[in-house]
Image (tube, rainbow, N blue to C red):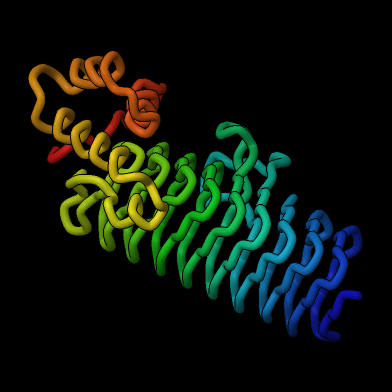
Length: 261
Protein backbone atom coordinates (compact mmCIF):
# COMPACT_ATOMS: atom_id res chain seq x y z
CA UNK A 1 0.00 0.00 0.00
CA UNK A 2 1.38 3.41 -0.96
CA UNK A 3 1.84 6.21 1.58
CA UNK A 4 0.88 9.67 0.29
CA UNK A 5 1.21 12.74 2.48
CA UNK A 6 -2.01 14.76 2.77
CA UNK A 7 -0.32 17.88 1.38
CA UNK A 8 0.82 16.12 -1.83
CA UNK A 9 -1.08 16.83 -5.05
CA UNK A 10 -1.71 13.75 -7.21
CA UNK A 11 -3.50 14.86 -10.35
CA UNK A 12 -6.23 12.75 -11.86
CA UNK A 13 -4.82 10.24 -14.33
CA UNK A 14 -1.51 9.67 -12.55
CA UNK A 15 -0.65 6.00 -11.99
CA UNK A 16 0.96 5.14 -8.67
CA UNK A 17 2.48 1.70 -8.12
CA UNK A 18 2.50 -0.46 -5.04
CA UNK A 19 4.28 0.70 -1.88
CA UNK A 20 5.25 4.12 -3.20
CA UNK A 21 6.05 6.92 -0.74
CA UNK A 22 5.08 10.46 -1.73
CA UNK A 23 6.16 13.07 0.76
CA UNK A 24 4.94 16.53 1.74
CA UNK A 25 4.11 19.10 -0.95
CA UNK A 26 4.98 16.87 -3.90
CA UNK A 27 3.13 17.32 -7.21
CA UNK A 28 2.53 14.38 -9.55
CA UNK A 29 1.09 15.24 -12.96
CA UNK A 30 -1.77 13.51 -14.77
CA UNK A 31 0.44 11.65 -17.28
CA UNK A 32 2.99 10.36 -14.78
CA UNK A 33 3.57 6.68 -14.07
CA UNK A 34 5.41 5.74 -10.88
CA UNK A 35 6.42 2.08 -10.67
CA UNK A 36 6.42 0.10 -7.44
CA UNK A 37 8.33 1.42 -4.45
CA UNK A 38 9.21 4.80 -5.95
CA UNK A 39 9.85 7.40 -3.26
CA UNK A 40 9.44 11.17 -3.64
CA UNK A 41 10.96 12.86 -0.59
CA UNK A 42 9.28 16.29 -0.40
CA UNK A 43 8.56 19.28 -2.67
CA UNK A 44 9.26 17.08 -5.71
CA UNK A 45 7.54 17.86 -9.02
CA UNK A 46 7.08 15.01 -11.49
CA UNK A 47 5.16 16.12 -14.56
CA UNK A 48 4.85 15.58 -18.32
CA UNK A 49 4.63 12.16 -19.97
CA UNK A 50 7.05 10.70 -17.45
CA UNK A 51 7.59 7.16 -16.23
CA UNK A 52 9.79 6.40 -13.22
CA UNK A 53 11.12 2.88 -12.65
CA UNK A 54 10.82 0.80 -9.51
CA UNK A 55 12.81 1.59 -6.36
CA UNK A 56 13.89 4.99 -7.66
CA UNK A 57 14.23 7.72 -5.02
CA UNK A 58 13.82 11.40 -5.94
CA UNK A 59 14.97 13.93 -3.36
CA UNK A 60 13.72 17.34 -2.29
CA UNK A 61 12.96 20.08 -4.83
CA UNK A 62 13.83 18.04 -7.92
CA UNK A 63 11.78 18.90 -11.04
CA UNK A 64 11.34 15.93 -13.33
CA UNK A 65 9.60 15.87 -16.72
CA UNK A 66 9.15 19.58 -17.36
CA UNK A 67 9.23 20.94 -20.92
CA UNK A 68 12.62 21.41 -22.61
CA UNK A 69 14.66 24.58 -22.31
CA UNK A 70 14.50 24.87 -26.09
CA UNK A 71 12.79 27.73 -27.94
CA UNK A 72 11.90 25.35 -30.79
CA UNK A 73 9.70 23.28 -28.51
CA UNK A 74 6.08 23.79 -29.50
CA UNK A 75 4.21 21.75 -26.93
CA UNK A 76 4.39 18.48 -28.86
CA UNK A 77 3.79 15.18 -27.04
CA UNK A 78 7.17 13.92 -25.91
CA UNK A 79 8.36 11.69 -23.06
CA UNK A 80 10.81 11.07 -20.26
CA UNK A 81 11.63 7.48 -19.33
CA UNK A 82 13.55 6.83 -16.11
CA UNK A 83 14.69 3.32 -15.26
CA UNK A 84 14.87 1.42 -11.99
CA UNK A 85 16.84 2.03 -8.79
CA UNK A 86 18.03 5.53 -9.64
CA UNK A 87 18.95 8.11 -6.99
CA UNK A 88 18.01 11.62 -8.12
CA UNK A 89 19.20 14.14 -5.57
CA UNK A 90 18.12 17.63 -4.53
CA UNK A 91 17.33 20.29 -7.17
CA UNK A 92 18.00 17.99 -10.14
CA UNK A 93 16.15 18.89 -13.34
CA UNK A 94 15.45 16.40 -16.14
CA UNK A 95 13.38 17.42 -19.19
CA UNK A 96 11.21 15.50 -21.64
CA UNK A 97 12.35 15.15 -25.25
CA UNK A 98 11.61 17.16 -28.37
CA UNK A 99 10.08 16.07 -31.68
CA UNK A 100 13.27 17.04 -33.49
CA UNK A 101 15.43 14.92 -31.20
CA UNK A 102 13.48 11.69 -31.23
CA UNK A 103 10.85 12.66 -28.68
CA UNK A 104 12.27 10.77 -25.69
CA UNK A 105 14.75 11.54 -22.94
CA UNK A 106 15.94 8.24 -21.42
CA UNK A 107 17.64 7.43 -18.14
CA UNK A 108 18.83 3.87 -17.57
CA UNK A 109 19.04 1.87 -14.35
CA UNK A 110 21.07 2.29 -11.16
CA UNK A 111 22.20 5.86 -11.84
CA UNK A 112 23.19 8.55 -9.36
CA UNK A 113 22.34 12.14 -10.26
CA UNK A 114 23.81 14.40 -7.60
CA UNK A 115 22.45 17.71 -6.35
CA UNK A 116 21.82 20.48 -8.84
CA UNK A 117 22.69 18.63 -12.05
CA UNK A 118 20.65 19.06 -15.24
CA UNK A 119 19.81 16.53 -17.96
CA UNK A 120 18.38 18.24 -21.03
CA UNK A 121 15.94 17.11 -23.71
CA UNK A 122 16.57 13.97 -25.77
CA UNK A 123 19.62 12.92 -23.74
CA UNK A 124 20.22 9.17 -23.67
CA UNK A 125 21.77 8.03 -20.41
CA UNK A 126 22.90 4.44 -19.85
CA UNK A 127 23.07 2.23 -16.76
CA UNK A 128 25.18 2.88 -13.65
CA UNK A 129 25.99 6.44 -14.72
CA UNK A 130 27.13 8.95 -12.09
CA UNK A 131 26.50 12.64 -12.77
CA UNK A 132 28.11 14.71 -10.02
CA UNK A 133 26.91 17.97 -8.46
CA UNK A 134 26.00 20.87 -10.77
CA UNK A 135 26.89 19.09 -14.01
CA UNK A 136 25.09 20.34 -17.15
CA UNK A 137 24.20 17.65 -19.69
CA UNK A 138 23.00 19.39 -22.85
CA UNK A 139 20.38 18.24 -25.32
CA UNK A 140 20.88 15.09 -27.41
CA UNK A 141 23.92 13.97 -25.39
CA UNK A 142 24.64 10.23 -25.11
CA UNK A 143 26.27 8.88 -21.95
CA UNK A 144 26.89 5.16 -22.32
CA UNK A 145 26.96 2.69 -19.42
CA UNK A 146 29.28 3.28 -16.44
CA UNK A 147 30.22 6.86 -17.34
CA UNK A 148 31.19 9.28 -14.54
CA UNK A 149 30.94 13.04 -15.10
CA UNK A 150 32.76 15.12 -12.47
CA UNK A 151 31.34 18.11 -10.64
CA UNK A 152 30.59 21.37 -12.46
CA UNK A 153 31.47 19.83 -15.84
CA UNK A 154 29.56 20.81 -18.96
CA UNK A 155 28.80 18.45 -21.85
CA UNK A 156 27.95 20.11 -25.18
CA UNK A 157 24.84 19.13 -27.12
CA UNK A 158 25.11 16.07 -29.40
CA UNK A 159 28.30 14.83 -27.68
CA UNK A 160 28.68 11.08 -27.13
CA UNK A 161 30.67 9.77 -24.17
CA UNK A 162 31.61 6.12 -24.51
CA UNK A 163 31.15 3.35 -22.00
CA UNK A 164 33.33 3.47 -18.91
CA UNK A 165 34.75 6.93 -19.60
CA UNK A 166 35.40 9.43 -16.81
CA UNK A 167 35.16 13.21 -17.13
CA UNK A 168 37.05 15.33 -14.59
CA UNK A 169 35.43 18.09 -12.61
CA UNK A 170 35.08 21.51 -14.30
CA UNK A 171 35.72 20.00 -17.74
CA UNK A 172 34.18 21.49 -20.87
CA UNK A 173 33.42 18.57 -23.17
CA UNK A 174 32.72 19.68 -26.73
CA UNK A 175 33.68 16.52 -28.68
CA UNK A 176 32.97 12.83 -28.39
CA UNK A 177 34.98 10.84 -25.84
CA UNK A 178 36.06 7.28 -26.63
CA UNK A 179 34.98 4.38 -24.41
CA UNK A 180 37.15 4.08 -21.27
CA UNK A 181 38.65 7.52 -21.93
CA UNK A 182 39.86 9.96 -19.28
CA UNK A 183 39.27 13.68 -19.85
CA UNK A 184 41.29 16.23 -17.88
CA UNK A 185 39.26 18.52 -15.68
CA UNK A 186 40.77 21.88 -16.53
CA UNK A 187 41.58 21.58 -20.22
CA UNK A 188 38.99 19.15 -21.57
CA UNK A 189 41.80 17.08 -23.11
CA UNK A 190 41.59 13.32 -23.60
CA UNK A 191 44.55 12.47 -21.40
CA UNK A 192 44.47 8.69 -21.14
CA UNK A 193 42.32 5.81 -20.02
CA UNK A 194 40.08 5.40 -16.99
CA UNK A 195 42.44 2.83 -15.48
CA UNK A 196 40.92 3.02 -12.01
CA UNK A 197 37.48 2.29 -13.43
CA UNK A 198 38.79 -0.59 -15.52
CA UNK A 199 40.45 -2.18 -12.50
CA UNK A 200 37.35 -1.71 -10.36
CA UNK A 201 35.31 -3.40 -13.08
CA UNK A 202 37.58 -6.45 -12.83
CA UNK A 203 38.90 -6.26 -16.37
CA UNK A 204 41.81 -8.73 -16.79
CA UNK A 205 45.31 -7.30 -16.90
CA UNK A 206 45.72 -8.56 -20.48
CA UNK A 207 42.71 -6.53 -21.61
CA UNK A 208 43.92 -3.41 -19.80
CA UNK A 209 47.33 -3.83 -21.46
CA UNK A 210 45.64 -4.12 -24.85
CA UNK A 211 43.70 -0.91 -24.20
CA UNK A 212 46.85 0.92 -23.13
CA UNK A 213 48.66 -0.22 -26.28
CA UNK A 214 45.70 0.89 -28.39
CA UNK A 215 45.65 4.31 -26.75
CA UNK A 216 49.38 4.71 -27.37
CA UNK A 217 48.82 3.86 -31.03
CA UNK A 218 45.99 6.38 -31.25
CA UNK A 219 48.00 9.15 -29.61
CA UNK A 220 51.48 8.50 -31.01
CA UNK A 221 51.08 6.33 -34.12
CA UNK A 222 51.86 7.29 -37.69
CA UNK A 223 49.32 8.84 -40.03
CA UNK A 224 46.02 10.55 -39.37
CA UNK A 225 43.78 9.61 -36.47
CA UNK A 226 41.37 7.77 -38.77
CA UNK A 227 44.25 5.86 -40.35
CA UNK A 228 45.35 4.74 -36.90
CA UNK A 229 41.79 3.64 -36.12
CA UNK A 230 41.70 1.53 -39.28
CA UNK A 231 44.97 -0.15 -38.32
CA UNK A 232 43.52 -0.98 -34.92
CA UNK A 233 40.41 -2.37 -36.57
CA UNK A 234 42.53 -4.78 -38.59
CA UNK A 235 44.91 -5.86 -35.83
CA UNK A 236 43.15 -5.68 -32.46
CA UNK A 237 41.83 -8.87 -30.87
CA UNK A 238 40.51 -7.19 -27.73
CA UNK A 239 36.74 -6.69 -27.58
CA UNK A 240 37.26 -3.44 -25.67
CA UNK A 241 39.61 -2.08 -28.32
CA UNK A 242 37.14 -3.02 -31.04
CA UNK A 243 34.48 -1.17 -29.05
CA UNK A 244 36.59 1.99 -29.30
CA UNK A 245 37.03 1.41 -33.03
CA UNK A 246 33.29 1.08 -33.61
CA UNK A 247 32.58 4.12 -31.45
CA UNK A 248 34.89 6.30 -33.56
CA UNK A 249 33.56 4.89 -36.82
CA UNK A 250 29.93 5.61 -35.87
CA UNK A 251 28.14 8.68 -37.16
CA UNK A 252 28.47 11.70 -34.89
CA UNK A 253 27.50 15.36 -34.93
CA UNK A 254 30.41 16.32 -32.66
CA UNK A 255 33.38 14.51 -34.22
CA UNK A 256 35.62 12.98 -31.54
CA UNK A 257 38.17 14.11 -29.01
CA UNK A 258 41.60 12.92 -30.15
CA UNK A 259 44.27 12.07 -27.56
CA UNK A 260 46.05 15.16 -26.34
CA UNK A 261 44.06 17.45 -28.66
